[in-house]
Length: 579
Image 1 (cartoon, rainbow, N blue to C red):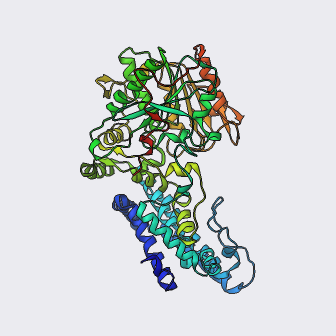
Image 2: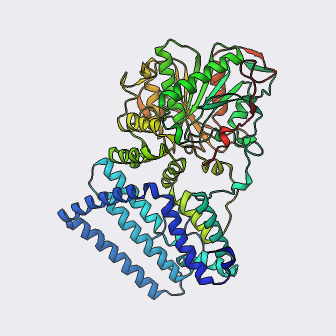
Image 3: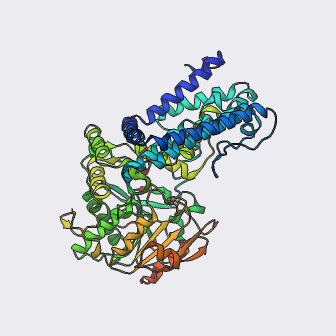
């Protein structure tokens, strides 16, 4: 449908909006939809088999559902125009039905409650299933995803807010929504923020610095000092390779990089390349040898320092830990201390991501990767969004397409919509050896860069920051690292989740953190003995870092050196590569 035709037939606009929305969501999940449906059907087939063997429990469940549905229908017929106590209410924190129309209009109130009763029936059926742990988790996850997708709030004809908004704007909201939809179809992703509001290097990723090295794997960015004196040990940051590094340099008031620079550190960060199909051969070893180890050598050459302090996040932390194990085998002591943000080393409990990872699903992805060479970053982004579908998928469907509104500018969501690809060789190695077989915690079970990997050989002082509501790297799984390393360990638990718990600057402290718990006796004992501290954990980390030794020296006057001259201004070309 052409833009000029949108105004001619409102009914056609309405039908087109519904049709195109369905096609878009199907397209977003095209690479995973068959796997998802197969997993969903297998889980429910197992439940159906149990029902046949033990029908009484299912009959009781359905009977109770029918009873409450009858009660709801009776109340609707008997209380038209009256306010009555609902039969069922949304769970705490569910904002989908907060508009007054869902309570005041009897038709939509009935629609809402009927949906919630059906949702409760399916949820309870999934909860009661007696499957093995892995299939039980899949059943519950896909059931919830199906329930959320079928909410009446997600459809134009059953959402009173959408209908009212369409009437109030004389249909303009539907036209705007369809235009938003067509734009997102071209991009291949749902817009979560006003992407035109941000420009890298202009109002996001603005900490002054320069690229001082690059190879096929990465660029190295050095940041300009803001203090007269700096610690003589430079700081190397190893970010995740599945996202862009500027999550640590969003805007000045929430930039971890700027904070670290302002505290008197000479800061360098790796900006990973966004691999293309031609780089399918890049391996985990390459991320170590041509990534972390090369970065350490370059930084030492630029600063004339014998040692560096290292900071890492998520899979960047997993890469750093394996690099440290390789260095330990090589008797290389170039890293003075290591910091790990929300890093998984023990993958026995991978959290909610586990529903996407088993032998069959991994093999299916590997088969597809043989043709493409890389796992598209948008596929990973979709998987992460599915874990919080109401917040990260359906709310934007309603706002952007059904109401025709433009999402507000939000730096974290801009970064979230800017993922990177993963080379097939590295991705397959990562899933199989860590998520599936959990070999990283087994001494010498893996060999990387021709070195046996034993995390127990890592003796550098280490700081672990996890977050209590992390659904990607559960804190009780990340805590295991404190029992694997043999050097001095500090463990801190931040409030909130995987991103917000890390990006918690001291300038506007919103949360708290726990510290000084008793190590060596498990997670429960640690949390029981830890002290809650209000505010940001960043100053706590900086205090720890300064205790690791090193002297103050004059801040460098220029970035790079003769061997590694400035290539271009920060944030560099690599981070600007967007699919």
